[in-house]
Length: 569
Image 1 (cartoon, rainbow, N blue to C red):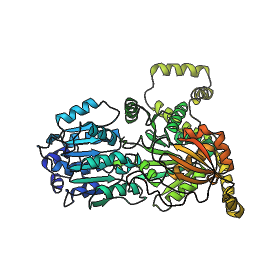
Image 2: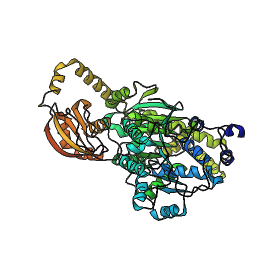
Image 3: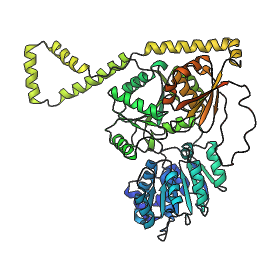
Image 4: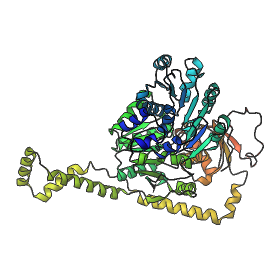
């Protein structure tokens, strides 16, 4: 793409030179769609998938109209994570270099003094996370009087992480803004509510459809035994052997447990979660980006805005909370036109719910049973064989050749090679023999399903007031809780079927759950398992009331407070 093509979008020469210096061949679809708008002075909603070039899609038109007189913050960009905010700032530096655009980055986990210094020196653009930006606003170190443009980047993720109150306070404080641009991969109800309140007659650009599949991403589902799920994940990783893989877990505790287990298995793994200091996060990310660490185990929240090139595979350990979570996680690979693989590791109990989750989408998946230990060993030996044969094709160390001749004079060649292979064979990972256990669980799952369909009395018993008991659990572990996530974690923690859970009622910081007798028994036996998954037992509240999920919504709540989500499973 030459100068004339860049210039047809009306880009000023300074921006054209910056793009050419970075060897940009052409703009991405989302960048073209935004640039070719007739007007850029109105509110705008843009839906585009992760890795599509959204950052330049808003920086190019904003910098195109930049005036050198802009020394007070005129542009405010809000993003969900420190890493994404810093990435946006880096993009703004090279694209705006010839325009001498000064920016300030306001993120948590870092000293405020340099941030205050940057603001006082004068910054035309401020990029920040909602929490730290609001902190500066309340301290008076950030003034929004001259802000004419607010960009909400990854709007769905900011709301998913619980930043609604901060966003509303900042948007209320920037009341003089002329336009608000919302960039979001998905448009759940909470994002729509925010847009309806703060955007006026916005334009709309969408480059995605619900359930759309990244064409560059291949999807696999591995079935593993429920009772040996971590062993199954180890087998999958040994079989796939990614050079750079991102493993998603539900909670911080699970993230740490999985990373420690993978490390003990000889896999090069590190964790990334919200309890880590900024220095620890930076160290883990730097090691992953450089390739020193091949596997990064993270929660959804920790991986938001994560920009690591060439992630070969994403692995989702357990049932994703919902379709949007599945799509957002998988978007961490296959970025910028590169191919990638998204692998979901499920047990038989989760498989049916996942099929239901993707049934109405065009996502094509390949279903596979967990690789068995013998197959892994055979594959690993084949890789080691190729490596050995490559070594003897080149020049071999003279001392080693002398040693080899000496050994051959004192031993039969076949026995000698066998002895050498025995010395190295112990270092080859073997995985676990899981085929028979998976077969048993799948047969059991099918029989239970047949039993439920053929037994009308079971359904009657489920509706009996004397059968199930309501318990209350506190919600922790980070991230947004959904009915699917609660169900998946309870079944996993207590090792029970989904049929043992009769009701799920979500509140802002707790959940009420109806448990059948077997699940209630294990609830009392395994409270630690629940706590590890972010579901700490609070109280047993008594028999489930059949009308307990009905009734009128509470009209006394403040209009802007988070509304309890009431759902029955």
